[in-house]
Length: 461
Image 1 (cartoon, rainbow, N blue to C red):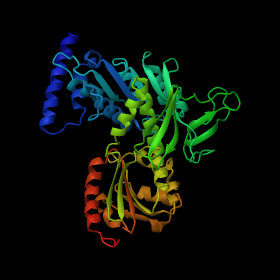
Image 2: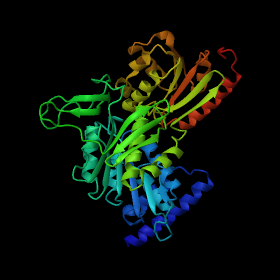
Image 3: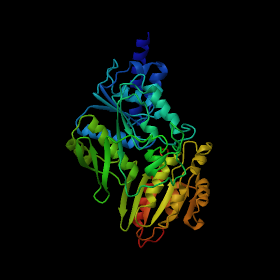
Image 4: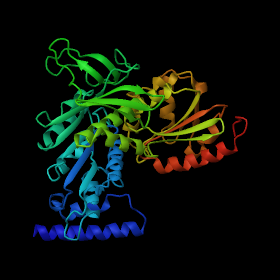
């Protein structure tokens, strides 16, 4: 009976895939929702790829997943992925439906899936990854993720014992997931920009889990990310199996060494979090058996997708587009930190609101007070434009961070933000947007392009 229910769910879901394509709604998890509703054990019966790579973590998992996909595609692999859908169980089910025969057999050899951390209990009992990459575990949306330790425990509880883990050794939460599993650690050796103590509002891992003494750091990047140790009991961060070293931000390269040698790889972006993403992907590909030379070829050919980061030049001005994950103070603080150290004078447009329910969800303001808006006090930032349903909340938070009123511009509608820009000579304009505002971002950027093309002499239009 259950087998018949599964086949019925599969066929109805496949029909919905066709209907969605006809109506141009391709990026949706609806087929998976339908299938699981009809057959609650659908994930158990649907065919899986022979080899599965899963990527999870608070930040960076989409970028890392896309980099892995690009590398394996270059290598000619046949891959099922959830790039166009969601990263929960219904999104994974949708991908498997799209890549299944009418009897449920998977037609792809490989699967590369981005997986939400809290979906572990709904996915891993039915699909066992050969490799699991965990980018980091940090504070996220408070209503979903009260603390990274909570997420670490979920992953540990539901992680398949045969899965090989690729873990960030510079993140104690991440490094301690599923201690019985086979694992490889990656990290970045001391950098010139490293700190001696945390300067961020968020530092979630401060106390030794063994003896409860305060942890110290050989070097610290941000939050709890760095080389931690306990001076009382001797607990320390794991040693690197894959160590990023000698980062060259001029030539955009990084040397990564392992037990058998060292190689130079291309960097995709000079931000610290994207440097971690490169080291992470290189570690995975080497663990999968690719040679350093082949991995170097992969890294020379892949890029960060435009929805995450992009820029365009107009005469003496540059327009940057950067994802700053809304409701995630940790991720937005990293973007603010990156902006504050970029050369040149800048203007920033903040439109990374939670647009899906910004008018009713109180969390959309509380995360602002964990976020390091103080980083925007840098003298190189001349104008900050706030807009949309949370514009007044942003303005209040900026004022509390000590930013002068004269440097804050406000408009109710996002499409009016180009009129609030100063557009001075040599201007660097950064538009920050969240995951809920990608379509709106495209419309705003379209209007900004028109303004910049028509701008002469740095005059405000």
